Length: 184
Image 1 (cartoon, rainbow, N blue to C red):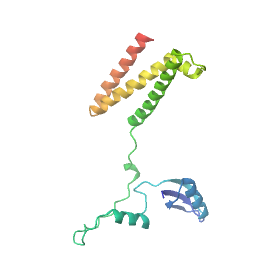
Image 2: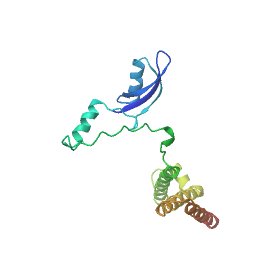
Image 3: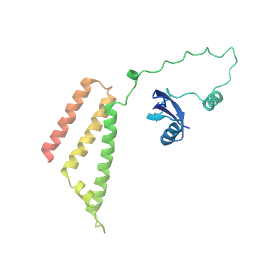
Image 4: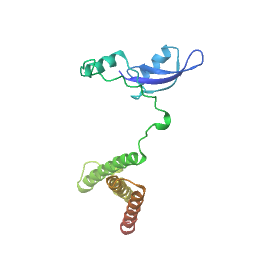
């Protein structure tokens, strides 16, 4: 069962934080209400925020190979709680690459449907696809998404770096402008 970390206001107007096990976030919210707490924030607990329950301890002991008492390592010091300044966030470039990939996949679907609709006489029309298929703006966006994915992949392969990124960005923008000057 997943654990949720919460911050809530108690009956004495003091802020309370802790973990609760529930099947869903709504179930955790309802359980806090039953405990006479007013939830402020609830989110699924990160591995560093989770508390060790007896069920989890049994599972961990079952997975740990048996060792004799003299072979057992000394107890490790507990890890300090990570502060908020050390949290790692998903890099912006990877997020943009994800969105560009979905956009490119969508445009490929539009081109596939549009080409099929344009080449064959179908008993029905898809006006939305037809409009996107014939739009020069969509073609430019498709090329921009493709060039971004291409040059960011090259940038990752080359080992990242600010100078390499700048040079590849200039090359990508140059390729896009050259296309726009000659095709549209």
